Image 1 (tube, one colour):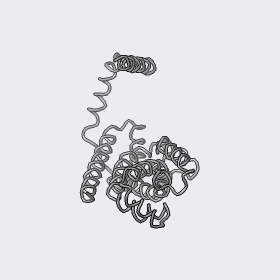
Image 2 (cartoon, helix red, strand yellow):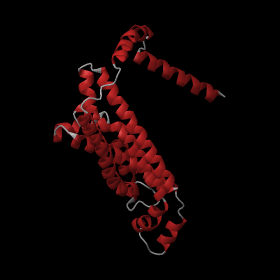
Image 3 (spheres, one colour):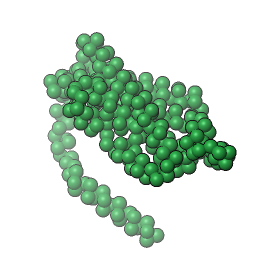
Image 4 (tube, one colour):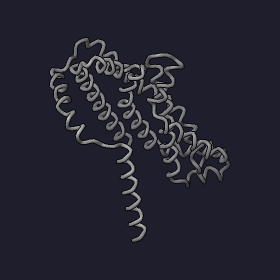
Length: 249
């Protein structure tokens, strides 16, 4: 009981500290609502002019997410094996690999893209690299957990027959966990479709570039049109990803 009270007080203290840092101001929100309402009223009807440009930017967003996810899956495979205790070929690398995965997951793809724009220039290439770096950590983390949670009896049998840990992982464990690992890739791809829509804010291509231009110009009819396209893309990706995941089960 004392632990529960102590935990509750600690949580309350933490939330109080968060409130002090954020300094939420309800008055500012109420004062800003009429201005927001005027902007929203000016957004109708949505401006879908220049459909070719919108389609090109939407295609860039899908390409950034898809290629970034594919490259991340390729890079994640060896990292996932090295980061799973039962099959790690070099146990001494386990903790460094896990630290690397935490680092990649801890830095958002938006931040990676922001840095890489300075290295490779503006355009979707920087966005794709940012997505790939962040997603490598996420996919490898999910895959390593699937490998650790799998039934290890076949692995132990393979090891006793003379197979190395890497061979046991490749021949036995990876095929056994294929539905979970494929599902993880689809989930990350679905997330990247959403995340890639804002990469254009830092000049990394995609619909985010159009969105930033429209916001800078206070063209809210164009903003609404872009948001409608983003929602449609996300819904389509969600339905496709869900259907593929069900097919794998």
